[in-house]
Image 1 (tube, helix red, strand yellow):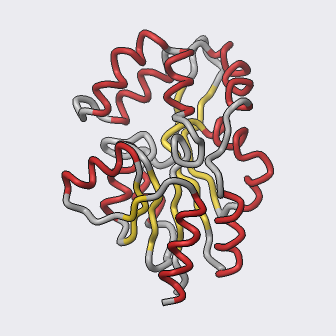
Image 2 (cartoon, one colour):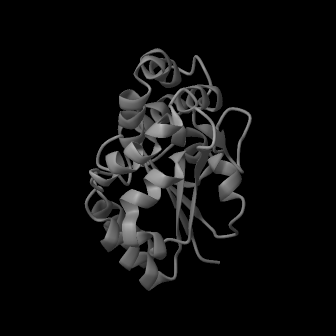
Image 3 (spheres, rainbow, N blue to C red):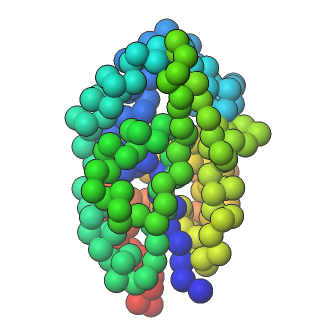
Length: 210
């Protein structure tokens, strides 16, 4: 059985926390109140992210797409996908952010990943309305539920922040950076530190060749 790689989007595929930056720009008051509480686990991702997104007027949807077009991806993603393709290993993108941002930033790479799981929004009312097929008890997008759809072994997680914690705890192999590293240190969960996707490619090559 082949491995499956599950990769976060915001702050992982993107060089900066694009979704957080979007929330700060388009929902500044809600973001100022809620984002610090998400990092300290005072409120759930499910509740906090929904409140922030649903405070954004629907008329801003086009501006959000334009905002996303300016965001850069972290180096090495294409090279990692090339390597995974050569090994017959799928890359699945799992994001607690909104789908249109993921697809806009990935561009043509959308066609090179095995799946994209993210939060959808509806724009037919005065404010955005959130819809998630994989809503969980504490997450708007329960990444562990997405992982369970795939039978690969081992399951490999790549992430950077609080939205990736449950996924990282569930995965036997984890590549972590930034806040996710700090959370995993507290949980005493082993992980592999990384800077860009070339690091991940090279480390996987070492592991699989061994």
